[in-house]
Amino acid sequence: MNYIPQYFPSLSQLQLAQFEQMIDVYKFWNNQINVVSRKDIDNLELHHMLHSLAIGSLIRFQPNTTIIDVGTGGGFPGIPLAVLFPESQFHLIDSIGKKIKVVEEVTKALNLSNVTFEKIRSEDLKRRFEFVLSRAVTELPVFNNQTKHLVDVKNQKNGLPNGIIYLKGGDIKDEISAFGKRVTVTPLSGYFNEEFFSTKKVVHLSF
Image (cartoon, rainbow, N blue to C red; front, side):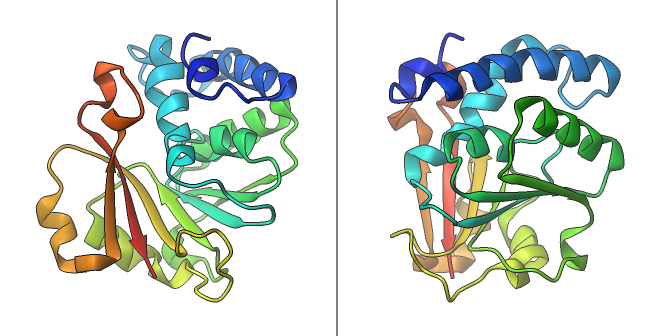
């Protein structure tokens, strides 16, 4: 690993080992079920794992925080964050079964007891979570309409208000304008030096 230990120097030996193993497991399963572009698999740590962990630059999830990763694909950002925050509970969903199969296999390989997963559309899920996460599956107003029923507004314990945390890139002024002061945008260029993060942001929509 070239990046994660540099930006997260307080990781335990177990966490470091899990991140190392994560790279090998994803490379194996990506050959079976393509969840990461084959052209991008060599950039797995930077473009997928570290990008997922960028949410940990915005918030330190408290123990027993409930988090759902909507449209998780092969497990991003949920699985890297589950390693970073082993005392929080992550539920990963996607509507495509083969992607959830990869999530299942990676979860088993890394022995992650704080991860559950389900093949389901967010609109059909009835549970509530303190935070809803995703990596830019659609524009924020659309995503908000699809997932706002999942947000638990009662259990506030993280400092940052419960709501949606969204990894986005590019110009997002238009899609966040309707939310006013409920939206906070944090450029990742302030945390990471690599060119990949120059236009990447973490968007927080409070409830």
